[in-house]
View 1: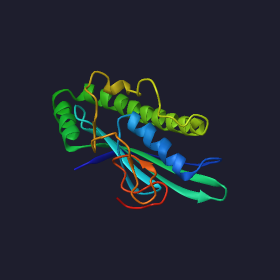
View 2: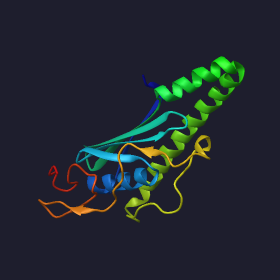
View 3: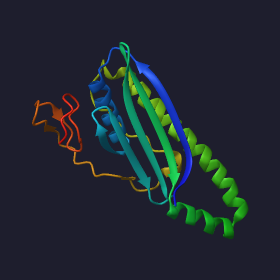
Length: 186
């Protein structure tokens, strides 16, 4: 059983950028931050990462819609506690209830703050993407509660090498299901 800790939604209209550029930027940003990404249509994507030590799964979904001359970007980020995480919490509650309650409250606030930081980072990156259409550089953001863990596991392996769409020749990521330009399904 999965327990949803929270879901954050944000919708923003973006001007002077194409749907394809938004999808490229979103793919770059979330993969850079260790999310496994999949595309369910040319203009929607989902992704997740899993912190096995905590039993925590973070998931994102992005949908694009046309809003006149602008592109509406709908972003959702959620955190879920899996069975493993819930079992650890129950054992901790039985053994040391007062400490678990205090740590759990702080952890929820940290999860929430870190999710907001990830979302704000995405919007900043997206707004600057038109001027600098390159993948992010530097180190990905590591939440304070995840430091000391091994890299999070992603829902799908990232094979990385781009390929060309057989229909129109546009470069696409190897994990894409649809072409971002013509919409052809692979």
